[in-house]
Image (cartoon, rainbow over the protein chains, first blue to last red):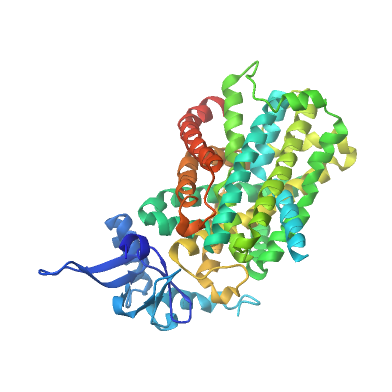
Length: 118
Length: 404
């Protein structure tokens, strides 16, 4: 597997095919006697912004804290929980139960009131 | 049978959705200042757009993902952030200009100043986006937009000289104001090849679940829709050249452009112009706002789609709402819509190379387009457009200063 080509930036869906975000960062474990190993993928605007410029990552993190949505973010998914990597990265999780949907659910309070929204 | 209906609807909506502030202002200026002479620029820009639209649609139909998502996957966020940031900025300015365009149309129709209309227009756009599915948004706007064919009718009624028209399709050097001529030619390209159109079209291809088997539909829609749309832009240019040019009326505002309908339509002129401008700009405003939601969601991997209940794609809904709100704020500050248009079309040209370059890679990557990779002609076109775009990007700012 080519990590940058086949994993990084690809869309992540949960076990029901619901959108969770994209692979914003890879977590590697460096080992003394063996090649590095991918242990997890990370999702979240702060790690994404961090990849563009570390300062943006800090700003985004600050914004998350200010908005009170920093709990459990960035979302780290162990490599072992990846079910498939075909079109999308399918992971063994339910999007609604993870911090990946904090904002989506938070906004539902307002957007759910639009006629026909639910 | 339904494929044929889809095809006709697709072509018709492309025609109806073609005219907006960018095409009206650049074509009207070109005609009033240089007669038919810049028709070639409209034709060339239309061809560029058609080729890019076809590729954006092909990429989306084969890979099942829209352009912005494919760029993120193939190039990563470090590259994408630059064209993406530029596009969002452009979309903001252009959206403010389109909203201003609708406001001017309402002002022409009612006499009430355009700034009073900004908030009601914003509410109308948002209501449509929040409650309608993709089909109604796309086809509704496109069908209503057919009123913009009045530009073609106007040009036809004025009876332009066929020989002059045909001759103008070949580029030629101007007799006067060469810098201004070059500026308008470049602006026509910037007004036509808008990044939002490509993202919107490719998102629409995914929304409508077009498959690999229907690629011919995509090709026909892209070329015929854009082709006929270009004819409407040419109609604006020709009408302006025959009405405004001889009277030395320069298009410094949209109100002045409205005069171009007087000889062809008499007392209906202003109403018809207002209707064409208003519907054209309203349609573009809806599409640009929606595109903001598309692009943000696709890049970040959120749920998106105008066919989804908004409550199950709340971040998508929030994204287009936010873009619309910021643009409304810009529009309400009272910037001149025509100036906003000219600035955003010039900036479009600056970012064009960064927008075209990903196509060159994606359309040759079998992981995205399988066996439907670009031909030598397609690649040659993209390479030429990237180089041309880079050259134009360098000259457009000096041209804007000297000729704008």
